[in-house]
Image 1 (tube, one colour):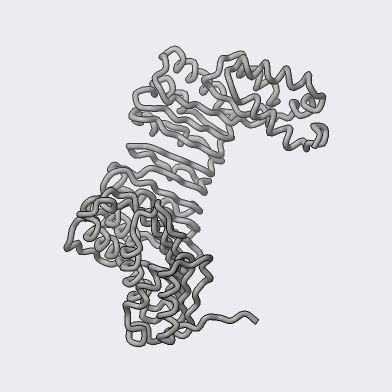
Image 2 (image 1 turned 135 degrees about the vertical axis):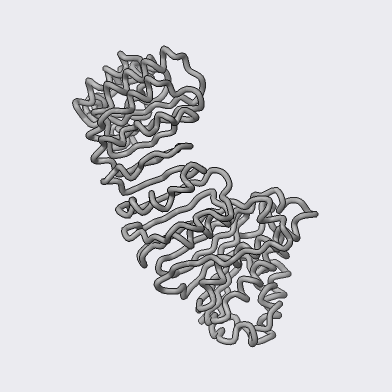
Length: 442
């Protein structure tokens, strides 16, 4: 394809890459060269949105060059201080923030520990009448975070907050997407804060640090009536259960839980894990389990729906002396959020990714997990197995189907490409027991 046949969208992306790479001298030289090469770049170069992303750490001449071509277009302001920087440069950044925040529609501020000066904090403490998206991480100098543009950002809809101390995020009445870090400072007021965020559509809470066993015990339950997606990341099993017991969504909502497993949860032989309380308006009629190389994903097709991501990256899974007890604890963890919801499930699908050297758990351990999953679904009517079938088939042959799965009517096995000898033998055994008949084409 000739250069002249390239679409303007492609040329726009080429020019955007050119002006946002290299030193500021390289940017100016690259722009001049491109405009001499082809007249179409002159036309594209007059597009205001090409010039509206400004790094406030740039020299003043470069910022003015961009602003002169943005023609009043709302700005995307960026400040990344990820390594020590001289105070003079940081003070210059603060001056640019003070000057350009009133024009900003997006603001992305990430400052590593010890680099957030008072001048930068004060520069952030001003009205932002055009601001719609804010990402802020001020490192260990977050005492200034309470003065952020919370006071006057009437159009803010997206907020990404990394803060070790309290920030009054409920001050944003137009907020629709919230992604924030939850530290110990938020534990006492988390439920009351969420109560004031009923207008937010998407909430993502990223946990930092341990959660005590009595977390939220005395707090009232709440229902987020407008929330369509509620996500918990990096949270322990104890913390996730506490949150699930206290925070409810309506039928159209989706709850996503990304667990992090700790030593206690994986190494305590007599670990007692109370069941999760999942407040479903309609119980799950279908459950999907994915056995992946480095995680297990359980999805409950209920109203609201739930998904649980269980990582397998803990070192105890790789230590042969600890593996047996760790897998036992892992199975109890999976049972804790399945048992309350799966007793009435009528469909179960189990998928295992193709075997590889990257799998953390061996087939025997995955089979043990599958066995317990099957036993938690006594009302099962439809069972589907996909992917690498060995672990699930081994589990199925361990149980008395007539007794444990008395309502099972339909049993489907997906075609495994080039099945191993072990899988072929298991399929023959399953077929011989009358549990499954291989479909004949035609």
